[in-house]
Image (cartoon, rainbow over all chains, first blue to last red; front, side):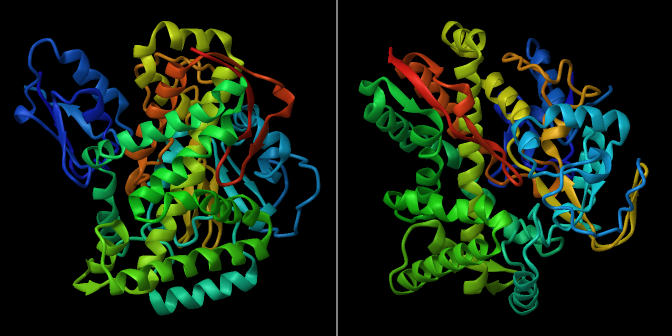
Length: 65
Length: 418
């Protein structure tokens, strides 16, 4: 599973970072990005799914490979 | 829709509401106490309602509509974000000031492109990392408040607890004296509560707050400090130092926006637990659900609405908006939309999928959302840790406030030490 954050949509709510700090980081302005080039380590798929489902800006998506 | 014309500006204040779709009143006592049934009715009947009350406004009640409108900047402008517009005399003064000095309370009252550099000035104060540095201060404060009341067996969860925390935390962050918190609270209420329907109070408290920050600036011009005011004074926007007017505007916003809002969230959360025995017990049995509980209470009791001003003609659904009209960003109603939330009118403390927009969406997302969440987390954690059991003494004595910010203002509880 691979995910990405659309930096143009992200408004810094930081829900993803708070739900899954293993998968996301945020800068001082709150803009989020996916760690590890978006690769979700095995076992963290549910956390990735929750981050996607809680983003008020619909900014996180799964990269189809 | 009934036959009331959206452009008919005949004053309706004081008359009973005859049809919520065309004559809603955000200051109606019943609406303030329990707006959800009205939103439910409107979603089916007229999802973007209109009223001529309080200067006239549109009121969306569906999640998708509210999101779309919140993201329609600057066609829907933030230049006057108050739900109840200022009286004509103050409006004229504000227009003159804005012409001379720029946005009054940037970034909340600014549109693109003026908005972004101001937002970027304040965001680092509220990043997840920065907010963690205020946690210990907040925890001490919450514990001290409980120490003060625990022996008496009674405590007003709104007045003695929820109301006391945010003004001290935000004062600490801005760099002003937390011991003056009661004054800051009075000033904020003067603007956000009393000031909504009392133009003189609004002017008076605006003057008091602006003068106070002017004084803080003068002090720091002589002796710069390591605080947010000094940092703002040294900041630049588009290559120019901030004027005193803008520094005051930003500080004014931080103070006022940091007080009423979080106080309402904490108060409503404790009122909920004071009333709902099963949910209260669940927090004692499963304290690990606190993070989802905080989000769920933010969704269910969303305290804040903001307003936009229409700059260019725009259409949402059947609502044809024309320049000059006001639109209420009804985030609380969006958060009860059954198309988005399963059982929206039920508090589900472990709701995991919760895309609520209590802090707004788009460029005007609440800059202090991480801080508000931290304060709620600490306030509830300390409360459940220190208090073994509690309940509302008299549900009928509980008082709500509404308009711009909805929340519990008095909630006397019987408390037992744990």
